[in-house]
Amino acid sequence: MFDVFEKYLRSKAAFTAEELEQIQAVTTIKKLRKRQFLLQEGDVWTYNAFVAKGCMRIYSVDAKGVEHVLGFAVENWWTGDLQSLASGQPSRFNIDAIEDSVVLLIKKENFEHLRQIIPALHELVNAILHRSFLAQQSRIHTVISSSAEEKYRAFLQDFPEFARRIPQHMVASYLGMTTETLSRIRRNLV
Image (cartoon, rainbow, N blue to C red; front, side):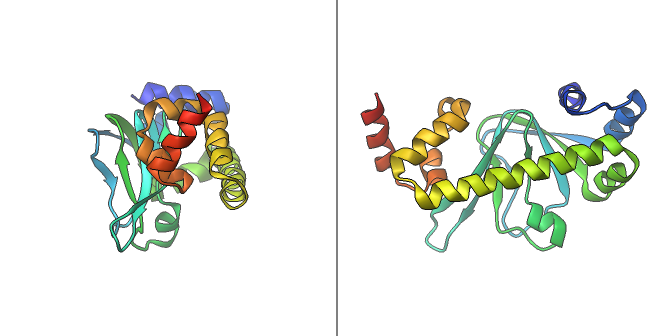
């Protein structure tokens, strides 16, 4: 599975063979079955995680037991809890596999060391953080200023592959609506 990660890295920046070997040396491959946790609320997140295969979701559970989906990650996406990673505090989130998945993990300290010695990785991380910030800003704007139908249309436009892979109740939670509302919207769009 490292070959998937290597292909991704090479598509984003000019890494030397030696740099890729350094990255591979500190990378662990974790296979997850459907519904298996990568991270559970209360645990401290200590990795940078790359999804090589499958689909993951990050979510929280409120006091009433209701799940609130914050996001998804599919092949060639990164996942994790950056707040827990940066602070060392227990996570408020869960990350689990929506389908059988393979995730490549690099411990925080190893990743930071690699960023210091591999300029291409440092630049890649900066670009990812920039894109993530812009995506979150766009999502917040959509959530607070769009109708339920507009949210779903934006979701389909931004993530067409998610509609086929992710259960509708999870999509509804991500969009901040009930499953019934999403079903009604989907019927009206046909």
